[in-house]
Length: 147
Image 1 (cartoon, rainbow, N blue to C red):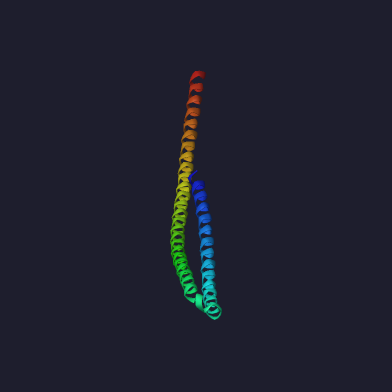
Image 2 (tube, helix red, strand yellow):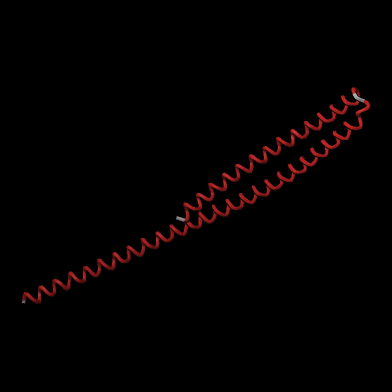
């Protein structure tokens, strides 16, 4: 049944949509963690300057590398979020298309059932009329045989 297939496809699309929304939320959490790490990196830099002046250049390089890595992660998360949003929009459009097609199939099925019902009623009327004609002919034959 195409209607059931469309219902299953729609349920699958909805499940995919929920999965993508969970990925978006996870990405937002990771972005917040990256912001917190930025703050941690700045605090670490201050501590290093106070305690280990001679190793300052080394730690600055480490901090810069960490910051660049976090920036890269932030950019990756932003791209992932954009991709997820685009996929979500695409899935929503597919869901709407599937809903529309399902409605059309239901309307078509209803129309087809009405046409079949009308045709069946017409055939029934024709059969009843033929039966009436046959009954009249049978009576004529009995009358003719009786004479």
